[in-house]
Image (tube, rainbow, N blue to C red; front, side):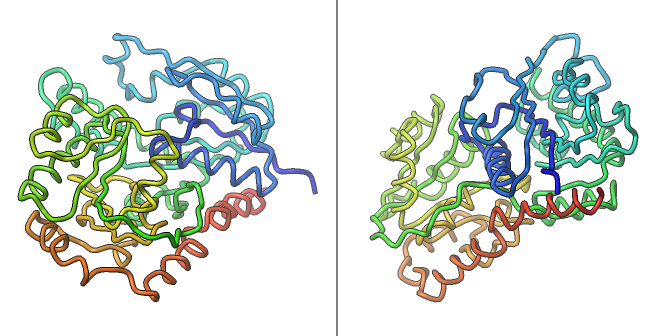
Length: 373
């Protein structure tokens, strides 16, 4: 049998795999390569640069500039889509009949312009984008508020294009329920990530919040945890660690005497994650799946989260759920009641061998291609 060839169109350069969306894309590419797929990767570059690492897993890697114009703000097409329209990409996609995997609604500008109308197409839905932008608008002011609000409306209208895909690959169960109303050919595809053995090393005496701290959602979560949970000087030290913390977060950390680790190297970050007694997670909105949740579950530490963050992931049973600051504090003050038992540890290991097994999940794409062809 001939090798399966697949175009993947990515919204960003998926290496280094250092934030949620590109982590999912990069480790799916790696997994599909291991499953024998020949990959032709197309990615939009707007600051991350070209990545030689991608050439290990892809037959060809193409880069396109993301063209941002102030005039695009007045287009009926969402800005995240409009700025990724590229005629060179369209020409390359139409040069053959290989299946295409569009990563995110962002990349679907040519879904309705393929010469071969029987072309096999997949769309990975990373989020319900209009809900995400609507939530951003409610937290913003001035021009940002207007932009996010308009973008949300445009994205809501643009979603109808997803009807044209042969298959939608949704990231959470709640997203699946939503997108099945647009395209009945929608399936759940669990996120891809770096698979690690669950560490058996001794846990250290600290709680950890980690993430890209320049992202508004993460900054907001970290500030909430400090001001509403650790403001009472709990007996367990809290460490906030991540890339490019904001000025606001730095000031709040100093005020409440919280240790803030600014842009730790990968080795240090991995060590912090592996040894944390408690992983403290929080989100004000239920969008997508947080890969920091999966990273936390790959350890033997307690995972403390509110329901918003785990909603739709079907991973609630592996976490301690708290929906207000008082409950967060009570869990921290009574940690002995929540420590993982040997049975809990076995259940986590089994989770990554079955439901969250990256190659097992991406085999779904291989099977779908074989089915349609």
